[in-house]
Length: 182
Image (cartoon, rainbow, N blue to C red; front, side, top):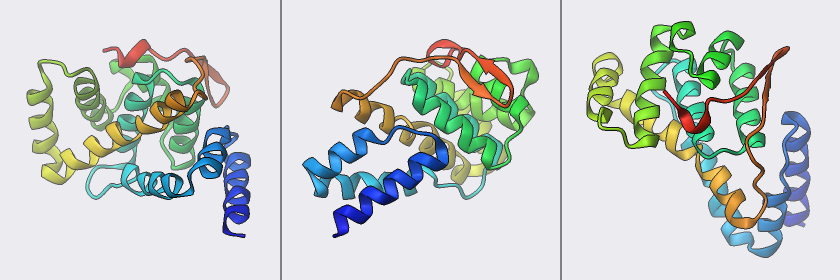
């Protein structure tokens, strides 16, 4: 009975966000224990104490773009839009257009980009975030960028990943700047 209800909840989420949850259905059927543990990731990937919502969503977008999964990028972009992040900021992050980003989004984007790429300026970017939002801000953005990456990685591992594609943000189609390019 519980498995049946969980499948229905997955289908409801799929309809709400127009996302493919086939890999989650497969995981639930093959290993309910793994599915339950995987479900805990959602709360960790949504952790935010200090940084503004747009900054958190910018870090999530950078993380998911790094994994090159078009449907996952679309989902994170839709969630950012639903949470109130401006379409112009979403487009700027996806296209890597620093000139169009707000100051807070630039800080988050630059930190998350350095993190996922393991760039040499990661320490400098971390200190900029720490200077603005403190240690909690560093944690917020680290979780946002890294935990969002687990979904496309799991999809790829289970054989359900799809390649990056143009993302719809409002009426615009955006080709993500490859692998969180700067």
